[in-house]
Each structure stands twice: as structure tokens, then as C-alpha cells.
Image (cartoon, rainbow, N blue to C red):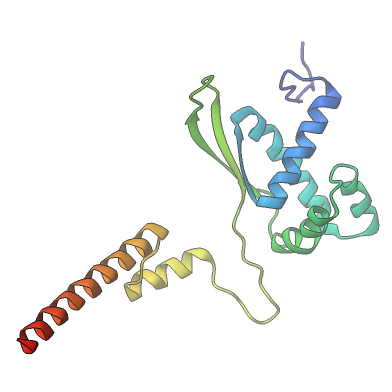
Length: 176
């Protein structure tokens, strides 16, 4: 029986599994979103969230604990200086997993794991959250997604080219 054994083994030895989780967590902290298989993403979630919780303490002891797993100094600095500060008022739930479907080559279920977007609030100066920014943009008639922004630019270019063509036609008629 597997009483008290909640470790997801991922068909790897202990050392290989630790190395895998360390590398995946470094990539997650560096790029803030990575694409991997669903079981790896689920195993990474608890590993990475524990590191973020340790980093929120920002003591020498916490830095040494996290340094056991994160060896790259630029990632370590980003974790303590940026990511930990971003989540200082949040108790867990720092990551989100999206299912992406199945990989074409071997049929493995793929997922994207990313850090949850949390804006850093400066003393006295409250920044808008992403939701409130979207609501304001919708009220003002501004595009909310990247696709809508691109569509708006394309429409503007088409209007500009149509105006240019009519102006050329008018100047040709005047010249005749």
C-alpha cells in the first residue's frame, strides 16, 4: 500500500526527478510560462509554489534553501526581487495550468504552466489589475485582446490606402 506516499514519480529515479523539477522550475521562473506534459506540469506546480513561498521570506536562510534547487543566479535574483514581491499578499496558487491537447508524435497530453499575473502594488499608489484594465478598455471602445488590436491596425491601414488611392485619382483628374 502507498500510505503517505504522494510523490509523483514520473517514471524516474529520485535524482533524475529532482534534476527535472529543478530545471523545469528554473525555466518557469525565467520565462514565466513553459510548455510541457501534463504530469510534469502537475508535479512542477507544487515544487515551484514551495520555492516561491520560501522566497517570500527573503532571509539569508530562505535564500540558501532556494539556492539548493535554483543554481542560476539571474533566475534566483528574479525569484527574490520580482516574483516573490509580486505575490507577497497572495497565499498560494501562484501557478496556473492550461491543457493544450495531445502531442502529435506520441499522443502525450500537453499543458502550459504559467505564473499567475499579479500586479505589484507600490505604497500608496494602487495599480489597476488586469481585469479592471480590460473593463476600462471595453468602456472606451478600445480593443481588449491582441487579435482585436491587430484587426484595428489592419482596418486603419486599409482605410489609409483607400484614401491614398482616391487622392491619387483626384490629382490625376486635376492634372488632365
